[in-house]
Figure (cartoon, rainbow, N blue to C red):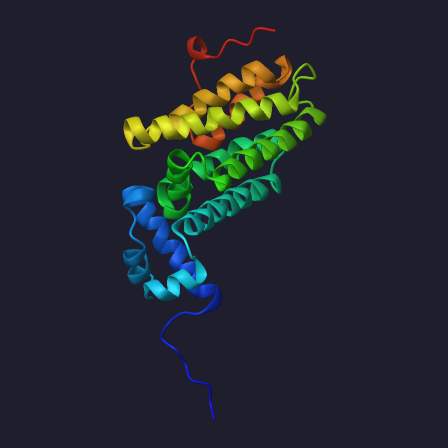
Length: 226
């Protein structure tokens, strides 16, 4: 006798549908405003089935943040296959910026991180990215793109909140319309502060390439004091 086929998605597909639906709700109305019943309905299931996978709303928020992290790490890993460490970080920041605009899961994860600072998953998210950045900056220092006078751990702990702040302010002030421009300014600042003098112009060129920016005129070239 053939197995009966259910119209309700099961297993991984069931979970993915719920997480996607929850992300859209969190992105649209925030953590407090999201209704689990509406999330379940949008995922093609019911509240009882949703709670069998995610007993509490907090569990669902954790799942969205975890999936956001997975997609962001994948963007960095992909860039590391094609570029040196610091170049990869610059290019992946462009990819992640684009995901923040186009991908509801990445966008919702960013909003949840702003709203749920006391949640363990948020602290883990930020600690994990500080560790990721520290690792990349360590590798960049080994190949000469970060000055030996800089502690990669200090740089990671500084650049992570800088990145988060750029995303947050861009979202709040302009609906992310100036996100690329703000990231370019951020990378110019980081490069001039942390890269050896002889590597700065090359890294500024990487930033222009990553964000599709036209080269500055002579009068607009960044100051690269030793």
